[in-house]
Image (cartoon, rainbow, N blue to C red; front, side):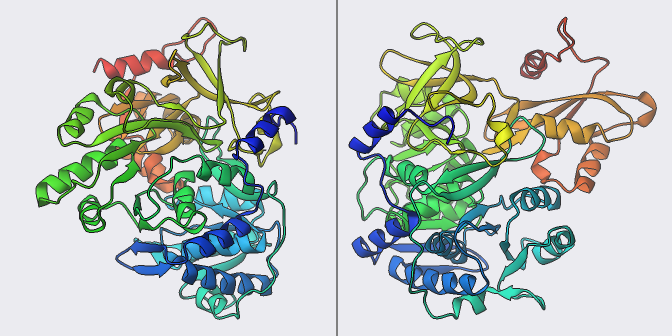
Length: 528
């Protein structure tokens, strides 16, 4: 494949044990053999469950047989838009046994995003709830099926006539023959918001996913992990994988509930977990209100945005060591801090580079800057993605030598710690969700009365950022927050993309070339 790392670099990864040389199905079998009693606990108001790894393996073989009977096999793409349920774990495992490609879809995505993803990916099937949290998923997919002739609709639970019920799949005799496949085969297709209006399909192989999982620091094999990440995100996929591919006992939350998370940490004596500053703040608030014992929790990995200094100080006072990491769907973990890092490094950097990972810091012309200088981060490593599903998107992103242009600005200090200092790509990160400014702007421009619009991230102490829209409007239109919100609701996109602050402005600041100066808009927000 074009833009792969040089063979000498890949040989070094193999020599250092960073490439497993196996498929997900083989890693699954190895995990079951080593730790059959590892447990997964699903915390859900609707579908709570507990199962051992051996039980999940048995169920996955049955579901794989059922999918095979529906002519789903190697290379076929199957979408999964379900919460953290046991069926989600089993579905991912079953697809791996078949050599099929898992396509997780973010649970908050609405009809517009789901239609685009299913259409572009040509997914052959979708695993979905019938109804969840007030949304009728069956109706949503049924409305889309007319334009998606290759789609078979697989439902968790009840199934309308002509569709397939999950229980019917799980009733098949276990699959006997596994697909051989290759570690370099496509295993995961996950769509992420970037600078473009439409989500981008990120492709990962068996090898890149296993390299990411193996790069995590060694922990006590009997330790139980808690994952708050939804399975439509790469962090959520990896949370599932730590159980069924690595044999680590896990607690998965259907949705974030801070009081419940505090109770789970106390009950399971969880020592480490991860999340955004929003997750961490609400967890500490809930534990303080209920008097939960969080003394077992000694380290917390915060991703997606910086940790406010006041939150760091609060954690320090209770003996909880927080640290950051940096990654993206295309390269899930570039750098990672640790609980034993000095406080100033945990506070001001995103940790050291992960095993096998290299970065370059370059200027706008692509030249390496002086050591310690700021520039765009280019990364490469064994867990870097294969490229986008639409190969046209690879241009300018994947660079000769196996490098990925991340679109983020940072610096690497003399001790090897990476610090993200700015964002070159035009996205907003709200509570861990990537939101493309361009997509929000495109929707705004379809609202009558909007002449121009520019969207930026508005700083928020727990979510990191919220969506703020600066609008040049026709005075006669009477634009206001309510009209903008109603317009976005009618558009069918995820509600998190709705601007939460609307600023009417006479003109947008521009440079001599006419480009909107978004740094100036962000500065206006910071200045109040």
